[in-house]
Length: 157
Image (cartoon, rainbow, N blue to C red; front, side):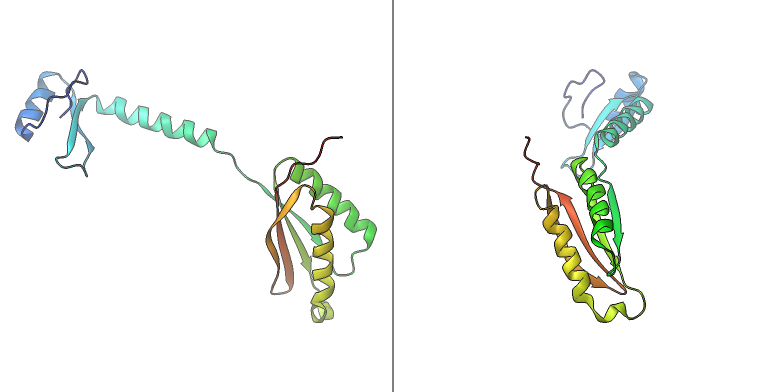
């Protein structure tokens, strides 16, 4: 048991611990139930809950959220249009976001997945200076997709 002034009291019975907590006009809180014997502390329970919630909020604020952006192509997408999409993807990768490249098939285009695979490989090659392929191209239903993650930093000129 840990007392009201953070001093170690030692192993005491439950009745004795409750008596000490009542005398200090505080609560008896079990802080480590899995320990042998369980560790209890004499403290203000409301303050304990508030401090714990405050720590959790701070931890959530400190987390970085990785955003996933997506560029969509078709097997018939021309070079210029793909260049514009790759330029957007480059900007997002430099900002630290992941990029999902999706090639959507319509109609009978699904019979030529090698065209989409070639497009995805070309996009990966164009972005290879600052991105790594996190998920290689794979077919999911009527779409083929690949995920690029920011990897190597671009060389400064």
